[in-house]
Length: 316
Image 1 (spheres, one colour):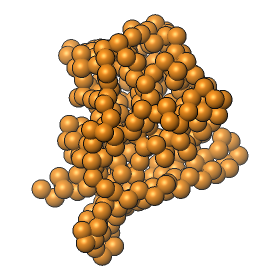
Image 2 (cartoon, one colour):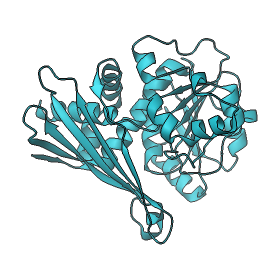
Image 3 (cartoon, one colour):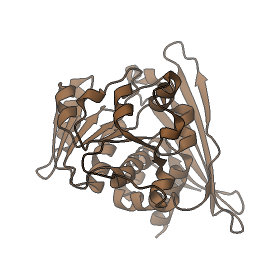
Image 4 (cartoon, one colour):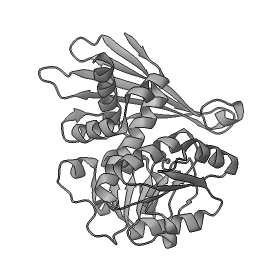
């Protein structure tokens, strides 16, 4: 069994190839059971254990079976440890033999960012140049890089509750071709953005619908539980809403579940998911002025596609 560490994942999985692999994965059949989601008391903020299996369609047997085991411990920041840890196990679909153990956070970060970029390829304006990144965690850098592959991003502004982290991330990513800066003024940055990408664990809405300019695309990534929110009700009311998977969003996404609970949004109001977009069953952006919203909670399908691409590239 091959052990693939985080640095190898980052070096091998380029975003252009990964976006293409995800597009192909959403066009074919993959079995993706609803992920197991367990809350763990810790004495501080509750932790989460996620188990995410998937396998490709049998022909006559799946090429691979994969499962990701992930823990989310929000209080780890105070311990100078990552809040998200885990591993991905890729198995041979014919025999069940282990093929690879892959660093879970690195694989997750790259496939999550690539899924947002894939959605933006259908939903963001083709001339989108200004990105607002809300959040300064590990995923923020991945999202900035992935969106710049899907759209001609030339300017990114980063907002976070800890300004020093936003400044540090901006300095790491800033180049002459792609200027990256930090800000304390979230409202102004949101009003000026062509794409707003959020990757936080906030329980209270950060992005206000009244801030949204015509034509903006909102990418909501961070909230993965029904009690988490990154955008207010007005964002949901003003936008044409897409999700990565309907089952996942309707079970876990607070930005979808809470508006449904209060009656301002219905499940049938979801315009489509990544299956619909990638298979051409639903049209993406319909006009330059349209506001679009993409909410992702992650799918084991994405992990499997990323792991298969990684192993194929490592072996070549």
